[in-house]
Length: 61
Image 1 (cartoon, helix red, strand yellow):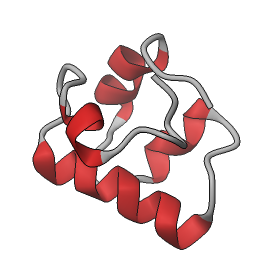
Image 2: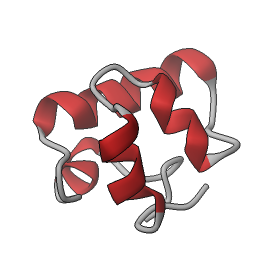
Image 3: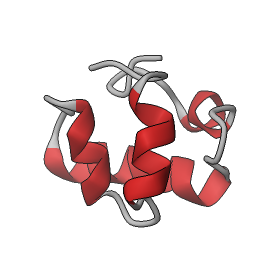
Image 4: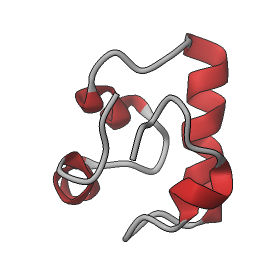
């Protein structure tokens, strides 16, 4: 799944990502521009190291 094109509903479908975290990802993208690296997910509120490990193989930029 592309972090730069997915909407909240699509992001919410990822394991471990609920509506609040999906909204935070979209807000981060709105405030900071497109993701340039999957590792930037660590900058999103609610995504810690364990969640980043789970998401790393499921998303692209």
